Image (cartoon, rainbow, N blue to C red):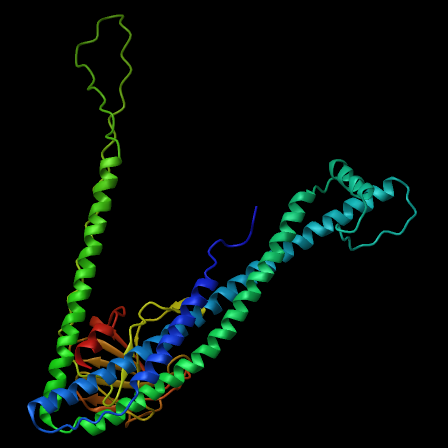
Length: 420
C-alpha cells in the first residue's frame, strides 16, 4: 500500500507558470512604448486618447493578474509542503516502530539460538546475509511481535518517494518566488506607465466621457461572456442530470396485498414490503448572480490595476475573499459609499478599514500605508486612507472585500470592474 498522494501537480504547474511569466514579460516589453497621439478636444483625438488609456489599463490588469496568480501558486505550494512534511513525519514514525519490532525479533532469535555474537541494534536489511534474513523471518512466526518484511520494504520505498516529492515542492517554491519578483517588478512598471499615460491624455471631460464609454463597453462584453459561460454550465448540468436519470433503473413495483377475508385455519399471507419511494429530483442549478448595481465609487482614486483572485488558496488553509488592486504607494483611497469608517490594525491586513455603508453593506480595506484622519462618518468619495504594503504582503496594493448586508464576503471583482 502506498502512502504517497496521487495528486502531484507540481510539474504541470511549473510549466504553466514559466509560460505565463515569459508571455507577460515579453508582452510588456512590446507594449510599453510611448505614443505620439495627443489628447486634443476633437472627437477622434478623444477616442484615440481614451483607447490608449484603456489599453494601458488592460496591460496593467494583465500584469497584476499574472503576479497575483503566482502568489496564489506560492501559497498553494506552501500548503502542499506543510502537508508533505506532516505525511513524511508520520511515515518515518511508522518505519521507526517497525524497525524496533524487527530488531526485537532478531535479538530474540539470536538469544534463543544461544549465539554469543554481538548483534547491531540498527539493522540494514540491504546488507544482511540470506541466512540471517531467514532467521528473522522464522522469528516472525514464533514471537509475539509480528512484522512483515515486504511491508517494511514497501514502507521504506514510500519514505523515499515522500522525501523526493517534498524536495521537488521546495525547489518549485523557491523558483516560484524568483518568478514572483520578476512579475512584481513588471506589474509595478506597468502601473507607473499607466500613471504617465493618464497624466498625459486624461486632460478633458471629453476624454473622460469617452474612456467611460469604452470601459462600460468592455465591462458589458465581459458580463455577457460570463453570462454565456454560466448558461453553458447550467445546460451541461441539466444534460448530466437527464443522462443520470435515464440510466437509473425504475424501482420494481410490489403488488398490493389482497384484501380477501382470511379463511379459518388458513395460513396468513406474508405481508409485502412497500415499494421504495423514488429518489427526489435534484435541485436545479442556481441562476447566475446578477451584475452589481449598487452605484458605489471606485475605492482607488488614481492609477490602478486589479486581478480576479477570488477563492485562491492562502496560507493557513484560508481562501482569498477579496480583489487585489495594485496602485503606487500613497495613492488615495476613498469611501465607496457614505457610512461609518472604523480604522484598525491586524497581522494579515496591516492598517485596515471596515466601512459600514448606509445601504448596510460592509467593505474591508487592507494593507494601507496610512489612514486619513480617524474613525468617523464619511461621505461617498471622501478620502479615508492611502495605498501601501502593510501586513502580510510585499506589493503596494489594496485588498478590498464586499460583504452585502454585513454577511459573508462575495466576489468583489464584478463590483470594481463595473466602476473602476
